[in-house]
Every structure is written in structure tokens, then in C-alpha cells.
Length: 330
Ligand code: PMP
Image (tube, rainbow, N blue to C red):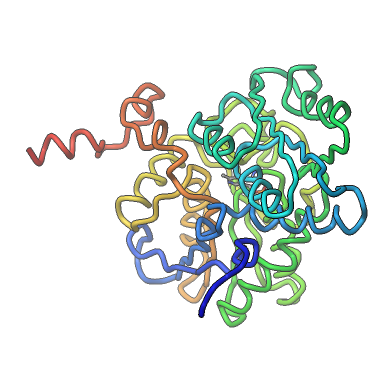
């Protein structure tokens, strides 16, 4: 029988899919690493299992212990799946800009979720950083993976995402494009690809306008999971050859196009990364093989990016709203 005993075995080894419609032509190739194929629906499954394995090995996470983490949702899902299998309790702390659907998903997996205000500084006692620190100190046998400092976050990408891409492209990859949140994806994957290609592969970060990685001050933006107002330890500042800033509007319009034109129902940071990848494609030359990583699926964003009213309320309307398309067909 072809049976998997554990979902954890299925984390990683995601497919690479050619983008055909949103590109300006067949060359250069733009290939998407589609991370929603992970059992938890996002790239974060990779870091969840690696961080938990390491904490078990070092004795930081004890049998029956509690995992406490500030997470915008995806890391929580990955952690919750591994925790369920191995008998840990999960308490997650989320900023209030995260879509309610995503919080509901975490609760559905059996996690407890504490929601904190986004519009306060990281040092504020109500910030999601501070609240998670307090809970980790108060709950007995609590362990905080801290995806923003844990070096097993970039290491998981160095050990899985990077080698997968090298193998899947048979060493032909020339550019790797990914959004930067904790920086784990770009730092770990980028380090591996730089090493194996002897510096040939170009590493390009994608960042929401306003975030520090592309020279902003941390001013608010709506794209979830990417951008920062601090410099996390998991981001290797030496790895990116370039960081491209993308507006919320461009990111969300592209996210909607990916669903409608490529059949890829993905999240807003995916649209952002694709906008950056297409900018790279404009000057990369016809032989380039550009890989863009799409971190998660789009179901958690139905009430925002895929909602015409929400888009127009924020001044982001594209020229083909889904409502107009429906009315047109009647
Ligand atoms: N997109 C989404 C939706 C995410 O949740 C994350 C992780 N915060 C990222 C992109 C960025 O990945 P990383 O943290 O590895 O930089």
C-alpha cells in the first residue's frame, strides 16, 4: 500500500511550475516554487519541523511542553501539525492585521491564539513580540521557537529549499526571487545557491514599500508575512544582490491575476514576489532561469485581496473586478 504514516514526511519537495500568462513571453523562463503544496499550506512547514527537531534534541522542548510563538499564521499551522503529532500544546500570538480566517485556521488545528494590536512599537507591552515573551516566561515548560532569531529557520532552507531548486532546475537556475519576512527563506536558500553555483546565482529580495529591507522606515503596508520594521537575526544582510520594493496595489493586482490567469490561488506576498521576478525578467536576458518562491495559498485572503469591495475601499481596484465579470455574464 502507498501510505504515509505522518504528514511531517510530506513537508518540502514542492513542485516548480512555469508561469505562462503573466510573463511577457516564453523567455526568460519564470518558474514558481509553489509552497502551498506543503501539508500546512505554506513554506513555513519547513522551518516548523526543523526548529522542533532541534529543540527536542537540545532538550529545550520537553515532552508535553508548550510551544509559544508570535506568528502571522503560517508558522503556526506548521508548528501545530508537528505539535499535534508529537503531543505539544500551542499558544500563538498574532498581530490584528492578520485576516480572521487565518486565526480561525490556527484555532481549528487546536491552537490557542492571542490577538495583539499592530499599531504599536515592538517595545510596547501589548506588541505581539512583548506578549509572546511574557507568555513564554509564565507558562511552565514553554518553549519559544522565535522564528526571528532561530538559526534553524534559515538552516531549514539551506538544507531543503536550496538543494531542491538546484536539483529541479538541473543547476540551470540563474536568479532566485523571494519575499523577505524573517529573512529565513532568502538567507538559507540564497546561501546554498550562492555556494553551489560559486556565486553565479543572483539572489533578489522582494519587499513591501515602506519596509526596512528596501530602505523604508517600517511604515505600515498591508501585504502580510513580509517586510519588517526591525532587522531580524535570521536575515543575512550579505545575501541579496538586490532588494526590490513593491507597492501593496501592484502586489494585490498580481495576486488576483495569478488566480485568474495561472490557476494559482495564492497569498499577497506571492503576488509581490512575482512582480519583483517580472522586473528581474525585463533585464535578465533570454537564457535566464528565474525562480520565484510563492509562500502560501490564497484561501486565507478571500475577505481581503479577493474581495472587490475591500480592494476598492483601499484604492486598489484592478480593471477587472470579479463582481463586474459576473454582472457582465448575466
Ligand atoms: N510570505 C508569507 C505569507 C509569510 O508568512 C512569510 C513568513 N513570514 C513570508 C512570505 C516570508 O518568509 P521568510 O520569513 O522566510 O522571510
